[in-house]
Length: 71
Image (cartoon, rainbow, N blue to C red; front, side):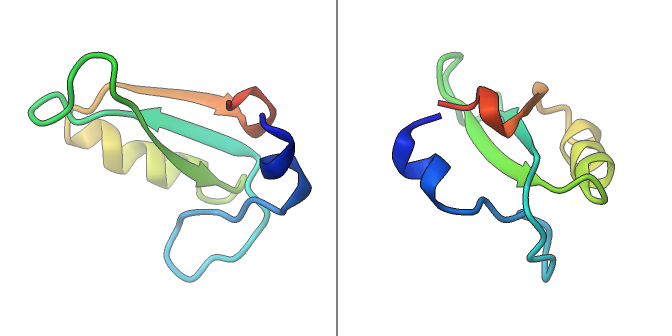
């Protein structure tokens, strides 16, 4: 992770959450994104599964990593 990102608190992407993110959900929509394009949602422990399921149900390729593994 870049020093700028590590200097600020990363917040969960779930609506109205506000908790500290500990997971990065790295995904893409294959209908509109090229193979090298990735988007990142952040998740706290409580929302990792629900956000992952939301993306998986849509058939989006998904990888879950720790926020310390994000660039």
